[in-house]
Image 1 (spheres, rainbow, N blue to C red):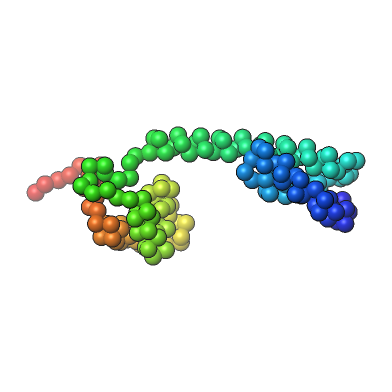
Image 2 (cartoon, rainbow, N blue to C red):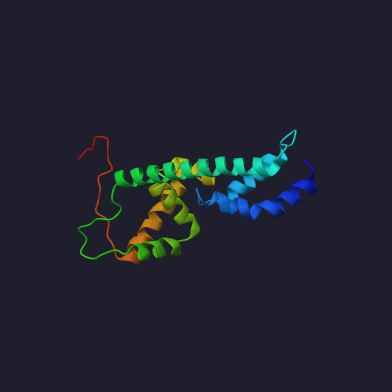
Amino acid sequence: MNPDLLGRLIDRHAPALELYARQWCDTAEDVVQEAFVKLAGQNPAPDHPAAWLFRAVRNGALNAATASRRRRRHEAQAAAGALAWFNPNLSHELEPEQAQAALAALPMEQREVIVAHLWGGLTFAEIASLVESSASSIHRRYQAGIHTLREHLGVSCPLLSTRTGPTTTD
């Protein structure tokens, strides 16, 4: 497609195409951009490029809306099955804003490990590979970050038994 023609089509139709796409999805700009990229790659160019663009935007917006609904449903299901992060029996309430601020105040290295481990579900070995460090260093960062969070929030963490193997007593 001729770059001048493509530029004229963008100038003439992009705002209307975005408005058209907003009927179905929240990512109208992305959908319109993808449609123009697809149009630029058409060989031969369609006989009626404006009509082609509206069809491409409609299809893209419907697909984006479906993907968005699917993602929200998946996230809701995942959240419903997730374990509670905070003990509801604590004597004081922990506000989400406090927890978010405390997490944001951590050094990036500690915050990255905590988020990847707790919310991402990665093991220390996987995180070590991700950040190109040793698993023992990642574990130390995690422990230091959790300790700092507990101090900052004034929250203690109940001791959980993490041993799975046999224990010996002397």
